[in-house]
Length: 314
Image (cartoon, rainbow, N blue to C red; front, side, top):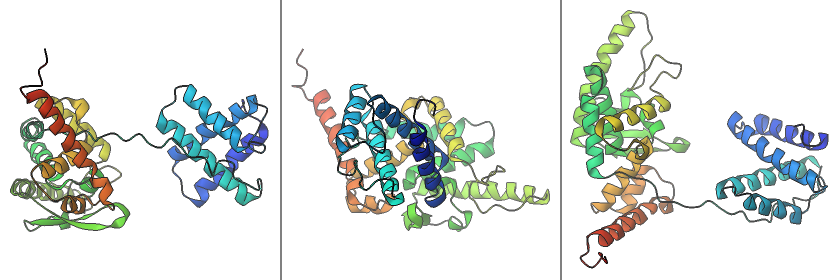
């Protein structure tokens, strides 16, 4: 913090310590706050101001400078949020009698339509899962992962932490624990049930071999000997990229979340009710689910522009 004053450094360090102690903010979150606030303190210093003396006009001028510097809308929104929280903390500590940032409206997040995949691309990913791994056991596991993800629209965190107890007995539906510990029931397609049955048989055999070697039994459907005890999100992210390459699908388009988007858009295109999709995805607000209607609208628009006989103006 050599470019800012000792007072600004004290404000930032005290704020970050409080974030860690009181709100259990992650290290990455605190690092982001720190970078944002150092930048703001440096700008204020160059204007002969400080966190202590800055007014609303100064904060707005700083945000205008960020915009002029070409910073993304999301970055500017985050910097304003960092300043608002710093000043809220300063008010509570008695360092300021006001919050000069509280009335400032941020640029907001630029909404973009979620990337999704065509039915053919999903089929190619599923085909790659069935054929491209080194061992038969891995092929069965990968097929189960992909079938479950596409059949249920689960978040990747929900998938990799799925307890094996929720999937035994050839279930037609499985219980998924989502954000905020909220539970929901999701149905399984026949293909997902078949893939699940095959994987559980192999998984149990592997677990029995590990148990005989002294390993503790795993509660997860996709166990791992790593620290987490289950397949990690990062490993699955890498796996799905490998399957994209093997299946001839652009890996830039493929993430675990695009399979979730594909689940929703394909259901909607097939005539499914928006409320039903909201329930299956575990969305708290229907407005979050409504984004998929825009995806369908965009696809229909593209279809008309590409396929309508009057679309070719050349």
